[in-house]
Length: 162
Image (cartoon, rainbow, N blue to C red; front, side, top):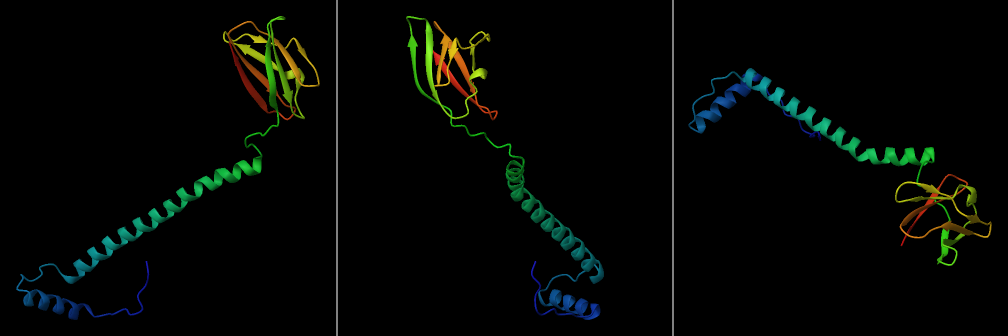
């Protein structure tokens, strides 16, 4: 990865003699392979290691950069999570009339798009809505999933269970 400042060079004949002298000094059997064959094997082994090292570094960089691609794609397309200011500020059961009453607050509530689903999947619509934020649903028992859309495409879901 880093180059050294000093690069020593020696001719092949002197290198082979030095190798044979090292084997003789260590009382080892002399080398039977030629120095050229050893050099070619060394070059092949180090080339494979270098290629593997640089390809793993490149793949690591790609893996680390992947989340930023998705983050930037969400920023540019504007398809992030929709924020809405719709809130259920009050609710109660009006048992006298057999309905559930909610008080909503928010600037961009689509009152015409409000609906609820029962447990069996049937859709019911409010009995009454007004621009002051009051919504009434016919309700006796069970579970209702109430969907409150806004004018920008967001939906707030409220669950009512009795």
